[in-house]
Image (cartoon, rainbow, N blue to C red; front, side, top):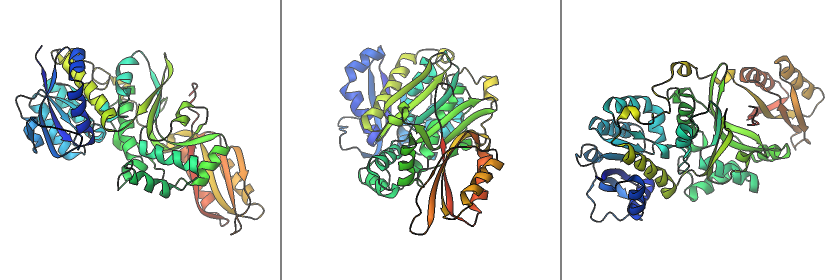
Length: 438
């Protein structure tokens, strides 16, 4: 059959990995696709050192690839928002299919891109945009197609998971482990996207849209980072039978959909609690299948390239199929009206349990007043640890609460922090059991 001709834009880590996988495994890929997939052109500013493009048509202008009549599929691996959006829309306008690993692009501009692609009858594939080489998008969109998805929860940023893993294993401070992650190349010089949860929120937005058939709504995702987590929090969580993970969580409720990224205490026996280092894992609860877990490398040259090339295989198989009969981008044909009307819930309306850590002056009545404030907000205490006073005569107090609404907890924390006998801000970490019953 006629070869599928690919133009790769970006030859950095993922682009170089994609180039190498396509060339190294060309015969196997052709057998699986039913036709050859050949690299027609590449566009790059720099070339990954492991990538040899001798004999390949190369340019420094990505838009040359988007308008090249000999290119069937544009692979967007340049990253970012604005130029990537313009590049993808230009490729679509020129009748080209698109494969991308750009989670920020899909989360922020996906609604516009999918609309343009549908009108043009071309494919936009984005498996590599979430969790690197883990085929979680295909699993949600196709493998779990019979299910009503109840919740999705995942470790979807390797940098944050690396930091929290080493804080727990070695008792080190956040800043110390972050510096190590930067030295090893796991974290960027500016780690904000990773440690503050923005990267994970991009990915969670995509997963939630596929799981529930709602439009992409990144701007409504609640995001909280891990930079305020201390070694003591990690130790106390462990003493209480929990492990802290930076999770992306989306749940379907009677009030709407939860869409939130934040540090979370989860029981040690949960599979997600035992995902360490830079690995990613996503747990999905379906009403028919029950809980499922998808685990593996969430980043890296060839793990991510594996997902990019898998998308190219899908494009090669479907390229001759009428676009009305292809698997929809976000799993639902159009956007199901009933489901798409589900609102994204504001964080203050979400119910969960909480871990609280506060420093109190060592004098009678302080703990009783804290308990009274919680009770007045309808918050009951499940567990309490009061440690010995520090050198400054401050007593660390750790509380676990039962489930309550975030707005009630916000008000309780505001009142506790206003107490004269409480030093500094109250540390609050949400607690999720992620059991089959939730």
